[in-house]
Image (cartoon, rainbow, N blue to C red; front, side, top):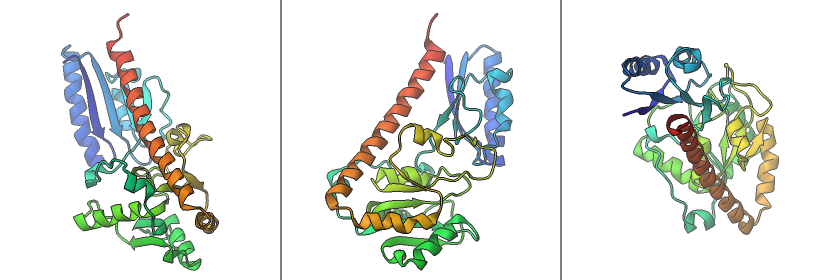
Length: 280
């Protein structure tokens, strides 16, 4: 082959070590003129600590022509480093959901849902407190656990998917990074993400559109909050919506999400073609 796209995981040290071995192997292929062009799609570190890959970039004397990087990295310049969306947790067997009439028009029994790990003194704990204190936990489907689980059981995955399908809104509090799988998984089911629009600690870009600048630039039809105390007013408005309005909003969210995925796919293809295959 003449060109290669590597998909790598740089989320934690063990993954970085494994990915580095791949890069060293590919570097040898480039030096022997076996490969001419290299792009990397990188599941970046949640705090944007990705310095380990910097020496491999062509701009720093390395051999990687293009980097597609997940999370709001300050490196993104849309020339040789591009931002890539996180997407759904396929590693936890989250499936590809194809919209259908039932998904769009069904009566959903819950105003909102949150199923996840609640850490001590976190915004997730604050969210659960707001729901309990306002009595909204009766109108929202919530299940809290104290310890994060790397893999879902078949039963817990089914419960999670059911919660998304039966809720008008999906609450998306900040984790280690503001961008999380839950946002995209909610979109898959037409459940509007209510996203905590707060920068997480670390070295991610802190510009006026961060966090989630990629989604905001694409016009994501989400509800953004700065404090979970805003939630009771949001849910009060939800109660006043007609089924027709909810169905229309669901359809618009699913259309946007489909368009966003297609837009990212087209952009990826254009960048690769422009850099790897365009003849002067």
